[in-house]
Length: 358
Image 1: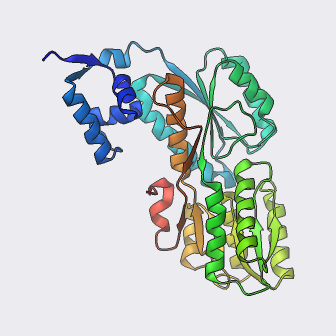
Image 2: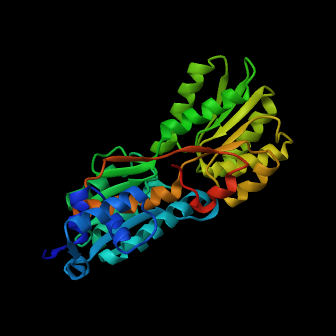
Image 3: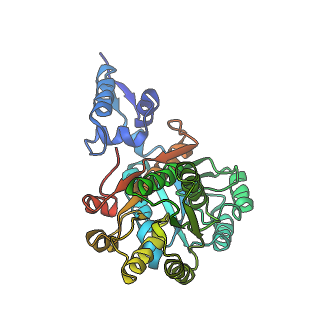
């Protein structure tokens, strides 16, 4: 029987998988489950296909992508460096597909992102196929994203989201589950009747912070309406958050637990709890895993963290943008990564996104 010539994209479309998954299998790379790997190999063998490498690599014009990421410096390095690592890993896997990526970096501030996106639109708007964005504000980006979408540029948001309908997909953690997990954990660890819980709710202008906080508050109201929730917001002012937390812990002797829904404030929270000699005396729940937290796990200052899979968010975000811009497999409008709880015993396995939730 004569061999049929096909491309990686042909196989991916027929099986409903991504082109990068097919590429990994055909070139014997890691990162594909046994069942999917065998399905692809069986399909290629049964149809007597021969891969047209020239068509796969040379006939395609460069796929030009851009990414606006949060600059991973100072306290922002704990979470956003992992997102950047995931993007870099995805880009490495996409290199055989003639993908080019231009990166922009911004502080965690919506106004700064608007300025950068306006500049991007002027400089590269006519030549870019897709934009990956970690939004720092839910509403401020609406107008500029509308302009970008009108250029035919595909937009994928990562970690947080925007209120605009201009973006084509969002890759994030399950914020509702994160809030509910934190609430359930605090309740199960034991909070006395009439006690108080501190919520460090992050930035009200960011979609994922809002949603996690609302979910936590709703869970606590349903399960423990007798507990008073003391709320502290605004992750932009780290010193202000620190002052408020110290003040609350001094004034309210009935504080029976703390939940912080951002990695930016988790480290400061741990330092304050330890400084005030409260380590191990009340449950303390933080967000995500990074090396600086390990000592606080070990001395039991930190009880647990809600792990939001930032490395996989970055990886899946760029993969999703690639699929959208190439017209490959159909992608969901919203892709929520698995969320889980990390304790002292397994925290090290999650450093740098090494562990993957299954």
